[in-house]
Length: 107
Image (cartoon, rainbow, N blue to C red):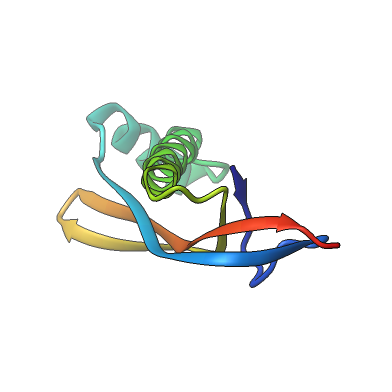
């Protein structure tokens, strides 16, 4: 599956648009991560626990979007975008969406 944030796939032509596809995940904070984040706010540095949480969230949301595109018969997803939103105190949604398309080699 080709996944790009551009409106086209270089060297390919779009032969069919399958429609909007999306994937999301909602994650809650972990008490241990919050304690470590509080210390980092005092001393400075990367919040590695939250970085890992975001990496996992992006991966899971992308996998869900790709699965939806495959179900539609697409071989690419273009114009991919990410968004986040707060669901409740301590929980957030990571949302990814794009356009599922069928691409073929340009002749």
